[in-house]
Amino acid sequence: MLLLKCVKYVPKFLRRFFDIKKEYVRRRFGGKDNNMKEKIKVRWAVLLVPTIIFLVVIALGALNGNVFIATLTTAFEVMMKSFGWAVSLTMLLFIVLCLIVMFGPMGKIRLGGPNAKPKMTYWQWFAVALTAGIGTGVVFWGAVEPLLFTYEPAPSLGLEPGSNEAVIWAMRTTFLHWTLTPYAIYVAFGVVMAYTIHNMRKPYNVSSGLVPMFGDKVLNSKLGGVVDVLTVFALVGGVAGSLGYGILQLSSGVSVVFGIKQNVLMYVLIAFAIFLAYTATSISGLNKGILWLGDKNSWFFMFLLLFLIIVGPTSYICNLFTQSFGSYLNNFLESMTFTAPFADSQLWPQWWDQYWWIDWLSYGAIMGLFLVRLGYGRTLKEFVVVNWIMPSLFGVIWFSIFGGTVLYGQMYQGIDYYSLYLEKGSEAMTLAVFEHVPFAGILRPFMLLIIAISFVTLANSMISTISSMTIKGGSDSETEAPFWLKLIWGIIIAVTSLIFTLTGGIDGIKMVKTFAGFPIVIVGWLVVGGFLKYMAKRPRNERGEYVYEDVIANAPNSSEPETEPSKMMQKLKAKFAKK
Image: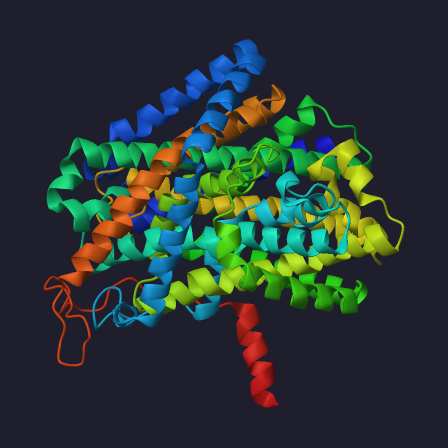
């Protein structure tokens, strides 16, 4: 019955899909659909090369998935043994840049020039930056990592599984994976590209981040083209991998909530429904679908956290948060440089810490490019606070509440979450938490909705960004790519993730995107190093403030209209104003 109902609504989704397309054409091209070909020139290398690579990867995985994954895994281990330390040092470089911008004179630079005005409220900015950056990650791992690391700590540390020390270590390691360090990747790339695109008026491409190091010549060079192709390939792999996780988690949830056995048809319908949602909202543009989804997704997150802290083990969660966060801050540098070069390490930091850094790097450059669109009219200090500090604090709170709830259930309530994890995997863990709280029958479907919206919010922002990178007309952050191009990228991501899910090859795509993520380490050093070198030579006034680039020193405010404020925030402000 559920599947029939899903099919029933497909025509309605399609009508809405093409209505959005018509509206997009009307707004962007004055209703002249055939003008698209005149106005838009495609960067065929950026479109075709990643597509061909993924077709080859899919074919190899389908022919002999086990051998393919085993070969990639062996190569991954060799690379991590040899160069994993460089990945950790690169993360430290990104954090240093964030601190320099936040506390130094660079932070006063306004993106777009001294006359630029922000186009969205702080809440809208934070909501989109948060939800576009985490996808299904926190939902998928929120209940898993604290529990898993408690009972399977890094072997070389000598911690007793399930001990008090293991609990604190597990929490601070989880914070390491999901707070300051990964968001520093987004922000480091974002700061440099925001400056070059808004203040130097360079094209809306990742390769623009190389201008401070190599000059304008890099924009039309082979190096610039390679960087753009590489980052698009890594991003598509990352998003497809996330959708694979989302398909598994949603199918597991549908099976639990509605009693329907997981099968191929369920995977296909879930992938198709998510494809329609993220492509439609991406086509509607930043100021429509993406802003709306980010706002709703963030409120859902806040409601869920508030509910769990009220009905859950509140005292335990607060105490666990306090000690774990203190341990995280106190041991931050040691944790960041943990490589375990010992015989009994079992490559734990390589398979967890450093793998996560590479995974985030696969998103990093293009996520940073997406953040450029949100930062117009803001200072670089605001850019760092909203995109680095605030999402990191959210991550600490999220994992403290979910981790605290699961650990309390495991250790004090006799709920064997760890055995459930070993039996059914990570995808079953999040929904399992809601089997032991009030209103479970309502909250489990609500959690399925959050999982779906979380992925849709990530995917639509990324599709919009890589589509803009695929056109030669995308010379500024306000340019929207045409409908058909977003549709192509949406299909590539959906088909890739579905095929790997059906063939049991999610591990394969994880390995593939790590190979794409590795070169982003080099790109990161070039981007950040070039920016610091460039800014060191920039002139300053008598107050020590940086002088604006000539091209935007007297530029007027952008003609792009301001977005409509969040209705929920308006209601809250009105209520507090009355009091």
